[in-house]
Image 1 (cartoon, rainbow, N blue to C red):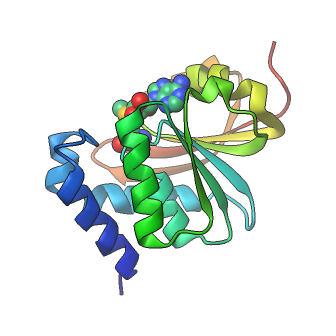
Image 2 (cartoon, rainbow, N blue to C red; image 1 turned 180 degrees about the vertical axis):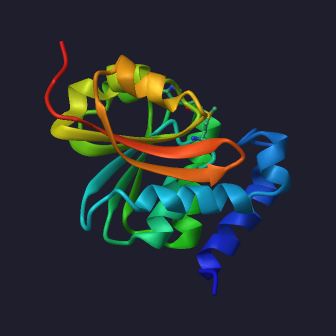
Image 3 (cartoon, rainbow, N blue to C red; image 1 turned 30 degrees about the vertical axis):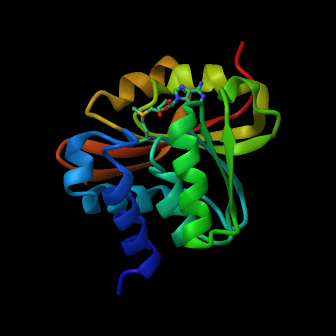
Length: 182
Ligand SMILES: C[S@@+](CC[C@H](N)C(=O)[O-])C[C@H]1O[C@@H](n2cnc3c(N)ncnc32)[C@H](O)[C@@H]1O
């Protein structure tokens, strides 16, 4: 059975998605496959970790991940005010006590973290560039990618330790960066 908070989140996306420009029309039309893909982000993350979701937008993957994994401490980083306001509303409405919203540029975030999720934000190398100041090592980056994921991992000189086909030519890829890269 689906967690009723996932249903409630879909309802919020449907209610506010278009007016607040939270996601593409394709996502808003049928959010469920995107929620299922978001839940796959949980697999490479051990119990009790802190997670930074960079560029959460309307809450993907951070909000479904927080619902499925109450053991994780999740920060949703989103620079756009309206999107961040929606994230605050969703966190409150869904009663998520394991989530904080950071409304700002993640390059100025002052926390420390070893697990970073980022969906539809930038290449792995560019995500690393904007979170490296906050890194605890080994650092794990997790993202949904297309068929070219191997090139992105190689560009960082990193190792992918978890690759899961999501269908439609997409993959959930988790890579590990052992130490700070120069
Ligand atoms: C294309 S959206 C993807 C949103 C969501 N992750 C998804 O998959 O639907 C990218 C989001 O990243 C945010 N973003 C981009 N750079 C950022 C930064 N440096 N700090 C915080 N948020 C950022 C944008 O404002 C935007 O909402």
